[in-house]
Amino acid sequence: SYVLTQPPSVSVAPGQTAWITCGGNNIGSKSVHWYQQKPGQAPVLVVYGDSDRPSGSPERFSGSNSGNTATLTISRVEAGDEADYYCQLWHSSTDHVVFGGGTKLTVL
Amino acid sequence: QVQLQESGPGLVKPSETLSLTCTVSGGSINSYYWSWIRQPPGKGLEWIGYFYYSGSTNYNPSLESRVSISLGPSKNQFSLRLSSVTAADTAVYYCARVAMTTAVTDWGQGTLVTVSS
Image (cartoon, rainbow over all chains, first blue to last red; front, side):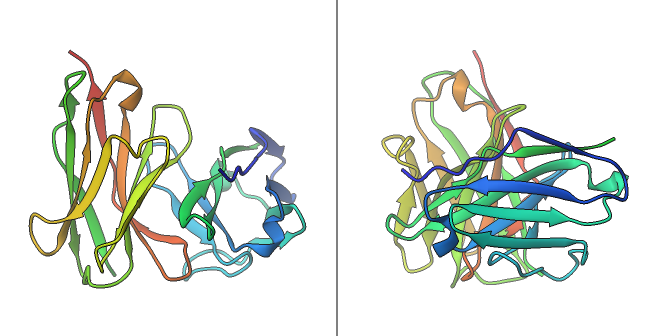
């Protein structure tokens, strides 16, 4: 089965940039999506198709994907960005949905 | 804007079958992939499976022997059945819509199901 690896935690000061990575074998050839989940809430899609933003997702959220790593970048981090972030893809050879283990973003 | 709402028992006994229903409003089930995703307390997201409106299904291999996802009981609903549950199946269960982009674009609010005697 296909495995997505995320760091358990990332810390960043307000106003700085946060990078959250998602590692997978040749992930650059796949379409990666990112979700933000705040405590007690359902996840919310913040980036899809590696780098597109759905309506309502702030411009501060961006994504990239190459080689074996996809990255979610959050610019000018705010206290309200503190949440868990998950990467996800559709593994085309099995048609399975795969989630990364999640990264807790702490705003210092 | 499609909305999804999970319903079903919040408490299930060990070895019994967990059954949940998702009601879809504001859109038709006749397209897209309709999925169930769960999240054990304090842990990450786990995909359970989906069905496509044409009737095809696909399940997480780790749950495949115990899970069934189907359309109904009403035409704007789809259901999850997970048999032989144990405490490890205690989780918040989400129903969700997967768009053609393969991203999960819409989520229900989630329902906590506890497996306990």
